[in-house]
Amino acid sequence: MDLVKIDSKNIYYPPGGILMWIIIFLELFTFGMALVAMAMYSKDEPEVFHSSRLLLNTTFGLVNTIFLLTSGFFMVKSVESFKVNNIKKSSLYLKLTMLGGFLFLLLKSFEYYEKMEAGLSIGYNTFFSFYWMLTLFHVIHVLVGLVILSSVYFSLNKKKMDMSANDFEASATFWHMCDLIWLLLFPIIYLIF
Amino acid sequence: MISNIYFKVLLLLLALTISAAFVAKFGFDLKVAAAITLTLFIVKFLGVAFYFMELKKAHVFWKSSVLIFVSIFLAIVLMIV
Image (tube, rainbow over all chains, first blue to last red; front, side, top):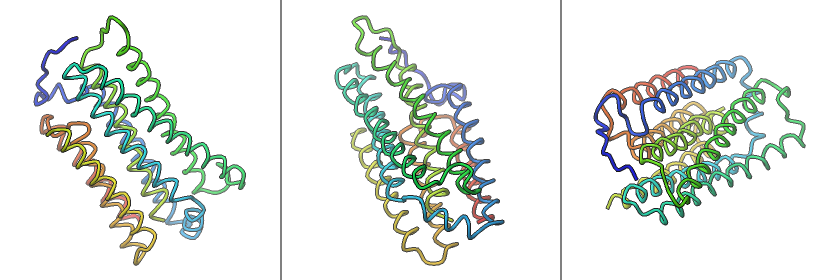
């Protein structure tokens, strides 16, 4: 295993890699601008946004936040174990991380099913257009994150493991990015209108 | 020791999540509740970025970029809402 120490204090080597951080900023700007647009539209139709927000299940959003944050914690533990070459523990924590992601998707699917059953589809009103577009875009990120983590998991369990700590850290950074995006989405969509 | 810090950060993040939900549900004025809720979430955002993503070990450029982004985002949303 590659245990070359990288100086994270160097501007070109942030933890997770510079390319990952460029992606993170692009994502944050994209979601940030969409949320600002949502807030601006809410000024035109405050009653619609308020009554629509009340149709969302805040408890589901809250539980999903807990799933993602706990999953992020296990990701940190997995990277930490990997860095001290404890592959068995790292693999176990990675499984728990992915479990958090799956539970998030499961609850989100149930929430989407409920909304569809109630006829609250993407064209219902402006609020629900934003709700579907933003949360589905985030779900796609979680799915991509799970694919990345699965590939890391299979690499970890190979007999001849050829993954570096930097690759592992970059995958972890992508997973944490899903947390960051959700922490912007949840309060604005589920709580403030 | 390091693991202990991460666990404390997780507990703090979970506590802030629940507090934010309570503020939003039983909040006072809509504007005040929005300001408190968003501020709590920005603190959580920074907790994830600085501890879980280890941004605290990064160059000051990356730290300040994240801080500037969240400050501008919070200011714009609070001005609108």
